[in-house]
Length: 284
Image (cartoon, rainbow, N blue to C red; front, side, top):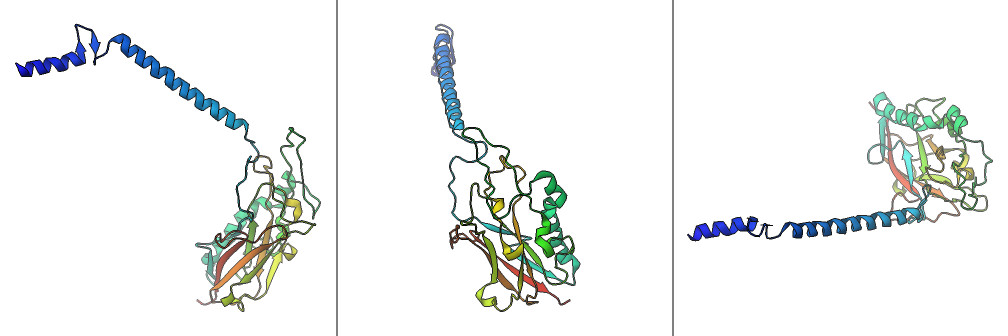
């Protein structure tokens, strides 16, 4: 009898035909609870949508409202190899051909025909400022041409091997894009300088820079962002090692020198500088 009573109690809790209650509540009670949670979650969803709408009204589609960044932009090289190491053998075409192909792909947007089609010929040595008129956005903004011919012997136009076959390789350096950055003052453009680490200082030999003096011309600044300046062509600097020591590891560091960019932090190895290892083997 006790088991029957217990079974009956559980059945009554699930559905009590006398009081017409389901799980201890009548239909009206369940209806009120469901209505409460429906209204509650609709209210929460409405608050979330309203908050998102208000926040989105403070954002600019073309540049960040707030920029929390380092004062010194990063630098990077092409090609960069694995672990920032460029190692190849002049007698093994496969060992350096991948570097030449990387530079071909990287420089293809800088072909004269593409640059003439998309970008303007600008006045050198001065900022290309395109200010907005109050709330009226001056978009899309124009960009200045950077033709790969400026890289001269490292352009890949006359030497499709970029000097790798001859043991005089070219490295392309770019400065990371920073919206609104003005990298030089008093008309002095920033420039790149490269040298070997202390232990390899007598092995690097002569280095040639293209464009002349390894400068990033001021006419490519300021940068206004990917959406505002859709055809922006990032300026480049090429370095060519003319008589570097062969068959040895050489640790090289390139830095940006500017009167308007603070030195990089030692905690960030890419802030204002880039380091890499170069080894050119000539023995089979």
